[in-house]
Image (cartoon, rainbow, N blue to C red; front, side, top):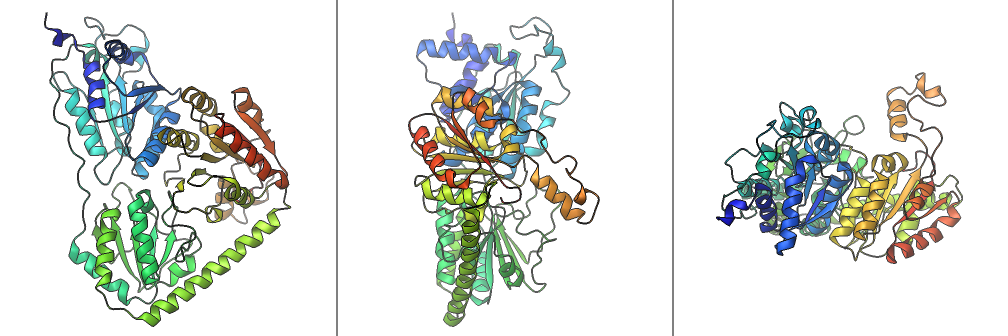
Length: 567
């Protein structure tokens, strides 16, 4: 007997993942995955190595875990979901991954196409109801590539192509559908080659020279970034350039630590006036460098937009001025810029004056933060700035902080070794718990804090999250800022209709959660250490207790009664 003919498509699929160094597959299985389950059992029995397949009982949690895992490890993870319905549950997280350039490999089964005659043919009623005319159409707008395995094709080659496309700059998620009949059928295809990671696009040296020349001659330059710091080397390059040339750095909707909090040129998120007065603006990996209804640059300001895709073509409508578009990955471009700047002549007095001016802005902002924190010591419900202050005081070094509508970014002190995940421009809430778990799986030695609002906590599938944390022994600390309403929705309404009927309505329609459940009680029932606090004087001590619990291997949930509007 030709034993090679007994190897199934599913077996070769798992082998393809292993050959490309995929270590983790976050799975919520369905009837379409029977051939994969059979292959995994057979491989385990024969001693053949395979990635770890983890049971994650909600797709939103699974795809968020993949993003946290990638953010810490730098390695793409696979998410395995159930046909159309599992794909639908994962789409919110997929949107986040797309906007944040995360190379998630989303793989779904495809409901059987045949009614009989094959091992994988339809055998339950849902195999009719879950069929669709275009399964990939569910995700096409939010992936770089989607495809469905066809008869005779080599699944190894498709997996290779999926991973290669996902990890090529600008990175992003991909989608592959695998029909059950083909997974169950014998597969005689030989494995193909493993593609290397494509080199990042490097900008035109002449464009970098022009940018360096403009920076050297600008009186008030500023750099705006959002996602550059996801690459540690790029962050270091930015810090060196900003310090050497006294260039203020504004973080617009930061998704990561782009520059250390203590850096003398870090304007955090309070550099609006500096940006408005700048004569040269350099946006680096920032899809939304400012919000025009709140701030507009000078009409005569020069704007250089630097990114792997400086047009941000995945955004349907986007209107920001640019004097020059420079195509190149930020982490590849900044070392070139530093080298080009070293050859430029500059006005030392102008640089010194700029350094002093930015120092004054920083000092004033620090005074405002200190005053707010001092007032918050006595405020109940608790000010979110006080949550950040307590977290700064008690968390271990090199922590991972995931922030989803809980903490004011400017009040976090984030230094070398710390890692931060912020909300994406997609605004797909419910990612915070999963990102934290994925980060913890990537590096169990680090403390991981998922700081979420009460709405984000409910969206984040907390019961599955606590189950997965126990099953994989990846305890994290969850901080829940419970203000009992959709504050962002309320503020958006007030901004649009400051004198409207809704402004005087109490409660404002569609913004209140009504009676708040005991989130801490629910977490305790799921096996976590949990507490609820409304007194600011008790918060730091309870945080210390929570960290002791996570260090001992138990997840911790701290529910904090929070004043609306303080994030």
